[in-house]
Amino acid sequence: MNVYLDHAATTPLREEVLEAMLPCLRENFGNPDSLHAFGRRAAHAVTEARDKIANILGVRPSEVYFTSGGTEADNWAVRGVGEGDILYSPIEHAAAMSAIPLRKCKKAVPCTVSARGTVQTDFEGGMPEGVSLVCVMAVNNETGCIQPLEELSSLCHARGAYLFSDCVQVASSLSLREILRHADAISLSSHKIGGPKGVGALVVKKGVPLRPLIVGGEQERGLRGGTLNVAGIVGFAAALELAQREREAFCTHTGALRDLFERTVLSALGGEVKVDGEDRVPNISHLTFARGGDAFLTLLDLGGVACSGGAACSAHASLPSHVLLAMGRSEEEARRGARFSFGRETTEEETRFAASAVIAAASARG
Image (cartoon, rainbow, N blue to C red):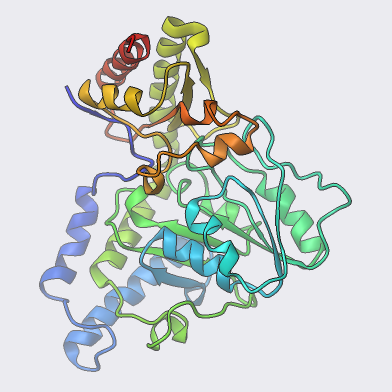
């Protein structure tokens, strides 16, 4: 048996999403900026998708900007939302962290992260002067820990700062409308929720200043040049609609499987393994093993279980997890984690098989 437990990295394309995309690949293939009938049909498909996404999120269509994915959306927000210093959590995705030095500001101030995996909101002396943007993801992509956006929002807005939240990992499990009650801008990615790769969105509320990231075209109100990925956008809208509609069922299904998986592994390995983080979304389990690391992940792969040591974008770096380091773990311990993420297609049989494979790999003497 081969079991895929890396849904936090990417998800299989849903059949309903593919069906929605096919007309844009076959008939409505025109450039949406062309003025002829082919272009108008493609532009209409984009408009319908934008309206659908805006309705799902409870925002204006003009507040939705399409991107090539979550990485671009994170980059754009960090570099382009507001002007001034930035306060950020050191557990952000690399797409946000790497963009911070490119922001035009005097200083970037990291928040403190608790051992539970959440940002601490009791800033000593209050929020630093000069901060115009606070960057804290809604759910950490490695541990699945839910961050205190409501508290952060109150602190931000009391000081006239904007709150940007990477929401790439939450669309299947949390209400995006609720998050947008607190955040001024969020990023989304299609392929995390059964949609196609290569498309996402940056949602920025009206009145929040936003500088362009990609120039050379008048697309996206002149703020993001480049021919729009029409089929991808249509698929993204279909996937987002399904993900938000099916949140309760998704959480029930994946939560039961995750709990079964963790109970089985913890019961067999005892003190040889620990669960990382608290207050987590139900589909992500991050565990640290006494004999974890690259060799352990290789054993799992050979044993038929696909998981990851953290974010897929950093899988080849062989570095300790910056998330676990921020949570107070040692560098050596931060190399021994593994992320198991469950999806709507994951079965109980697969979960039991995966747990057995994890126990065998963790017990192997090398």
